[in-house]
Amino acid sequence: MKLEVQPSPDTQSGPPSHPFYLSSLRRPLVDRAEGIYFWTKDGRRFIDGSSGPMVANIGHSNRNVLDAMKRQMKKTTFAYRLHFENEPAEELARELAGKLPEGMDRIFFVSGGSEATESCIKLARQWAVATGQPKRWKVITRFPSYHGGTLGSLSITGDDALAETFTPMMRVMPTVPAPTAWRDRDNLSMEQRGIRYADMLEEKIQAEGPESVLAFIMEPIGGAATAALVAPDSYYPRIREICDRYGILLIHDEVMSGAGRTGKFLGGDHWNCRPDIVALSKGLGSGYAPLGALAAPMRLVEPLLASGGFQHGHTYAGNPLACAAGLAVLGEMDRLDLIANAAAMRDVLMAELKALQKRFPFIADVRGKGLLTGAEMVADPETLRPIDPASKATQRLLDHAYARGLIIYGRKVKGGVNGDNFMVAPPMIITREQIGEMISIIGDSLETLAQELDLPVEG
Image (cartoon, rainbow, N blue to C red):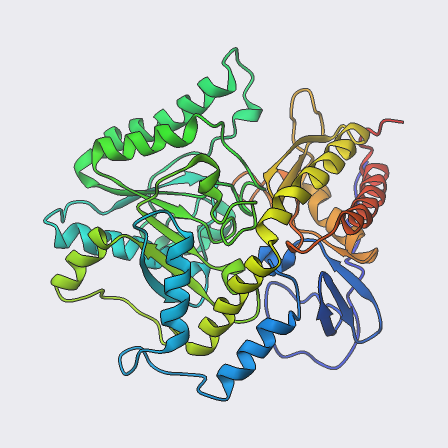
């Protein structure tokens, strides 16, 4: 049977729109947002079940954050870092360092996740040159993975769909398989699988030549490219051991998993991981202002400063208004105990998602930490055969949920080409009752998807 892909329900008419983004699809005009909700100009209400692209960690229109930004706006909205220090940047860096692993106390501010990961690899390279290791330049990454959209961050992103057009313009870095241990059909335990996936890094280092490898970058808990993938516990200490053995820097991309979303301040904190460099963004500014950061220990920063400084920067680095917003966001996380709420609501959300998995067997896996969760969909749960890409299952599900007033997130999980999933990552202020409302809509949307694509349903 030939499937006809239905258009999105929001190809609305209206005045010509001059901005352009991913496609010509029109969406309703937003009017306001508060808590976990958006309202549009035409009066519809949407639950923000993904915090945008996993950004709005503390929810929308938090009064204390807005007041802090207003106070800063009355002072100055911009001060260039080469001309002045500014109090919000100093205070935010101090507060942030106190929440990071010991010694991770040097902060470089940026405006977003792509800037953060690119800053990490440039810091790593300059450190190597400053310490007499100029042959080290390769940054090993995982496939699939997502670390950003600039050419530098795209070179360490394992995603064929995003990278193909730009490959001639950049130097693509070597990859190792992401630890999709749940898919493996063998006689190994999950602990053994975790070791096996980690050992693939050592094999790649040896194949590339250890003297040429600079760093390994990974998301402790997967983001958009792997739908909240969590490796077996044994994976994390083995990765650290291998990096130490070869003198390679371990970079944790915490752009999506950081700032409390997973029930710990950093996703890597679940395993007491000890990264050498950390990238943060998204929840750090929580959508109130463009904000991100690189964090590193002084042992990496000092050689750069001694050899002339960090040869890198962006105009809005350490912007006082953005940093004032970030400082207030961290304050609200503490005041409302949102990291603890993310951990507690994770149990509620995961129980509900696993109930959906029983009802809809084409959901092959449910995973995540805190309020960063994902579910992977397949055509056959026994063989894990993927759903026909032509059916556009993920986009159909997202559209069905959107039409019912819920925003969730989804992306192809096999290098951006195949594999269907959806992610549920609401703001950390969410309540048990609001999770129930979300799950009800997801269930109705999955029911419709199953009917359209003839997917199995129990009961």
